Length: 172
Image (cartoon, rainbow, N blue to C red):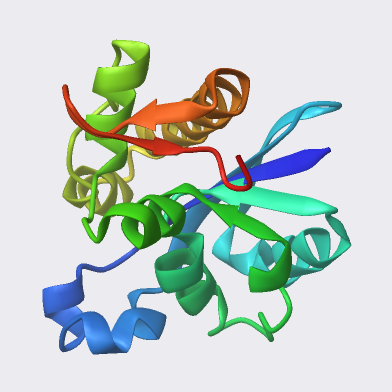
């Protein structure tokens, strides 16, 4: 059974010298969803426990985990081996099309519903302003959309990336 994951950060890329320094963004909160037990929120002080949970998961599903979330988490402990059991929707879409398509775009086209806020910049603002409940809601919404996209894609066999272009479920 997959474990769904999303992570938010304390900083923006421009503040840490660009995307080459993703590890320096620092985790503000991560949210997971396990179909058996529901949502769980993880704070920076719990990053090591989150990594242990991820190592124990059969499969991890997320959006841009391999290029972003795992790099942020690498500040807190080893992430080697996680990619092998990760279903990264962003990476699969990019490999099939050569295009970077946002979670918001995929959710709007396939589910008729977008993210709580289109940009991750808002999550950093919530963190800085101490709006913790809004930050958790933002992160959980991304996890929910990721889970629904995964389920939709698996059931339909395809995921639309525009009105005229789609990607197929891996292995079909």
